[in-house]
Image (tube, rainbow, N blue to C red; front, side, top):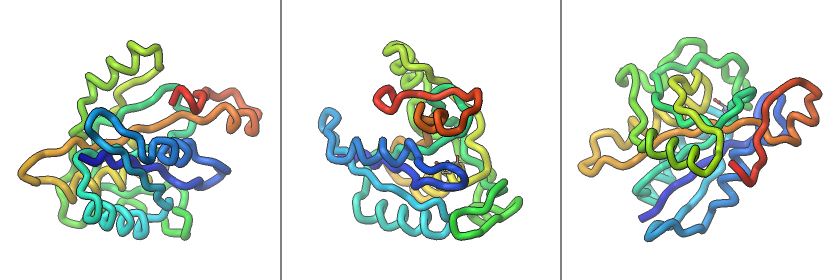
Length: 189
Ligand code: PCA
């Protein structure tokens, strides 16, 4: 079985994106009987959706974990929900800025993550890693990709675990900001 892990390229004012490095770092790893494959997505609505759709078709993963940066968060945030709204506060990397549009016209209002959130939180906390269950992934590309993947695989005979994890800044990012902000070491993430 393949576990597909995705990260995002840098976007907005951020010169790096911790989710990109993480996705690359787990490529090819084995977890039990599963093989991890990874993909780095552009922070652009149409291309992220197209790249994901072809990866789902090609790899037929048994689980999907999307990763992204949540500027200012102090803990690993396992997201509970993806909503059918794109309300971008900044344009994506190709200048697209939908305000209040559906990710998928006619789709349901929201999907819940099918990852085992509580077990993941317990496992992280037991290892001494600051983590939380978050009840909003925002209305930017991270929410968009989780909604789109949950929608694409919804109703499959065998439900598969799919969800999103938001990550804090890397320490190097905070060092370059010169602001009072939380961060987490890449190795811990
Ligand atoms: N974070 C953004 C999009 C890409 C990323 O890494 C978000 O939280 O929507």
